Image (cartoon, rainbow, N blue to C red; front, side):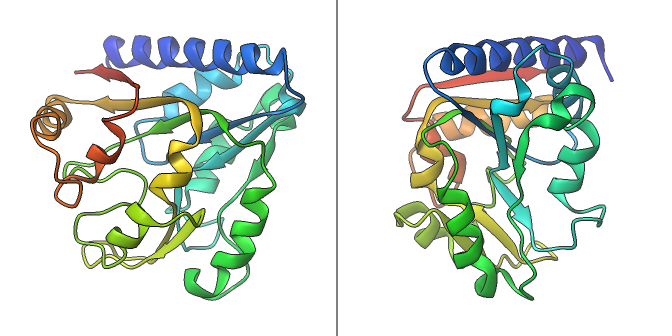
Length: 221
């Protein structure tokens, strides 16, 4: 881990800590929406060390692979192992899977649980892939148009480029946050973001769905 990425993770953790603290001054609970993958791990560890009233913090994921929560591909497992540690284990974590065999069968149950959280979220932290996807809004997904347009909270997603079916919050639901942050690392991601900023076709680069709202960008080489 480079010093720049470590420093970035700490800066992001401090910003999220301040945001949650500010919101908790005037509401009972505050919701944080995080993304999976390898990029957030140092941020998770830095945030877990912050002195928040964690029992009043709710955490959920922007999207999830429809896998067992003990699978190495599970974003929920990543959150449990790196964020819900120490005092932060007192936070209420709402995973995006159920006992159903497919996300299509499980989406209504997961949506019901998700809607009980403290919306609007205090912070949504997005990642971005080299193909411009964010959450599970993939350019080649058959459900991309639906996920960009629907007012439903969650969408079951099948994507030819991805081995597992997924479930994702819709763009509409992810927009329902007080603050949006994009957390990316590497020159390749910076180049993708520059391309995204130079056009407006959301189906080509779905991250564009969030470039029209205030978006804080946290990037390191």
